[in-house]
Every structure is written in C-alpha cells, then in structure tokens.
Length: 318
Image 1 (cartoon, rainbow, N blue to C red):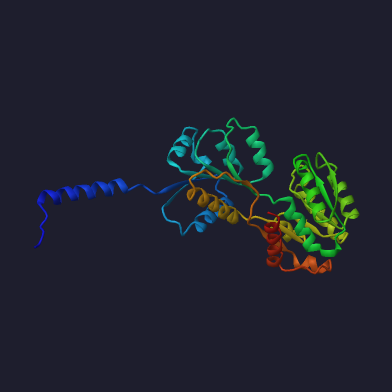
Image 2: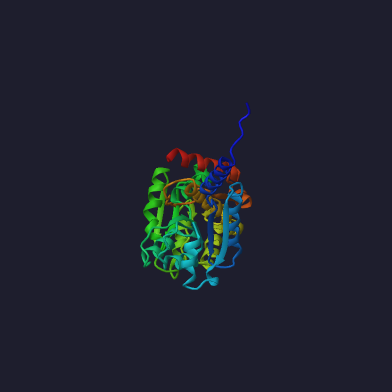
C-alpha cells in the first residue's frame, strides 16, 4: 500500500523546514577595519600582508580607511560596524587611543617605546593588542654573535634618553650569549659623535639601536664612516643601514607585520575568548652586506641560514 501525505501535513512540513532554515542561518561575515596613519606605501604593504595571509579564509569583509578620512564622530560608527580593527602606524594609534571603543584592536608598525608612551598617556585605559616593529634584544645580539663568530670580544652600544629603558635587556641578552657589552649613555646628539667614535675604537663591533635623540641620519653616516675607517663591523636594524655600509641587519617588513596581524585575527576569529597580544614580531628578515663582510674578512652564512639559526634558538628558549 502506498502512503500519500495529506495536504495539511505537506504544508506544515514545508513551513517547519522554512523556519528551521531561517533559524539556522546566521551572518558569518567577519568585518575588519584597517585604519591607516596615512597614504604611505608602507602602510598599504601591511594591508597586503593581512589580506594575502588570510586569502584562504572565507567570510571576511575588509574596509580600508585613513585617519584623514575620519572625524571624531565617525570612529564610533567604525566601532559599531567592525568586529576587529587593525591600526597601522603611530598617527592611527594616537587616534584610536583617544576613543573608548570596545572593539578588539591590534596595533602594528609602531615601536615599543612609542606604543608604551602613547598608551600610558592615553585617556582610554583599555588594553589593546600590539605587535612591535622593533626587534627583541636577544635577536639583535644573537645576530651579532652569528655574524662575527669567534672574532667578537665585546660590543659597543650607545643608549639615548628614549632607548635607555631597554639597556638592561641588552645587558641580559649579552650575558646569556657570553658577550661583553660596552655601553654608554647620552641625552642628546651634541656629544654622541665623540662617544660613538670612542666606542668603535674600544670594541670589536658596534650595534646600532634606533634612538633619534642620539642617532639621527647625520650621526648614522658618521658612525658608518668611522666603522669603515677602523675596520669594525656594524650590526643594525634596517635594510637602509646595510645598503649604506653596515655588515648586517635584522628587521621586520611592513608586509610581514601585516601577516603577523593576520595570525592575530585568525586566532581571535577561531576562539571563543579574546586573545590579547603584546609581543615582538615573530617574522623577520636578515640582510648581509657581502662587500663589507669581504672587506672585513668575515666568513658569514647566507641570510636564510642565519635566520633559521635565530628562529631555532628562539623556539628552544620559549
């Protein structure tokens, strides 16, 4: 015998299925706002890093804006329509910390010192996530040891008023690696020329640390000139230093900063609890100036090998 459904049963079933379908449907789109400090190519490189890293993840909606596009009232609207905000650069950081948005926020392309200063003096006391642009002391000192190998006896460093707070970090890193750190402090660039010259002459190598108060562009040129005259290697923090005459540098590109931001987004999207990051960049690039290395008779591994050794050491120490 064939069973035939009653018309009323068919109608009831159809309504149930429709309601169940609507009840089960939710908007799974994750809305991400990228707030840039300006129109710099560096900021857009960071954006590219985010979108490229998350290319395989579906359901993401990006909105790109700069602080020049906003008025004070607009930031509240951004907070309402955003699930996450990526803040790129210092100006955007200052802007976002003047608000009290509850939206999970990550700051990138900002130095540790700048981030801490702005956060400390902000009216908004909530904790943001941040991936610093600068490298940890252990990474920079390990690069120096790997580049200089057994030739390194002591390392010279000059600390200014904004970088002196990190001096102990470098002393601790040097001690762990059995390096002797010869350091001096200056409050301005007026006397730093003479101090840098004496450090270069007294030590086996010089590690340049970002601090505009004692190491501006003019003094950086003098530093590289004196290092060349005295045949001493300089370890630095940017590609431009290597191009200008430093033997090596370690740094994080804006694209890699964006990729790290993507990792933060992914971790938060896939978690039921907010993940707050306050860390140095895990992604970095090592550059070597082969011409300078040859001139100083330094036998240095290629950058990829050095990067791998640094990463292995950091994993071991975690």
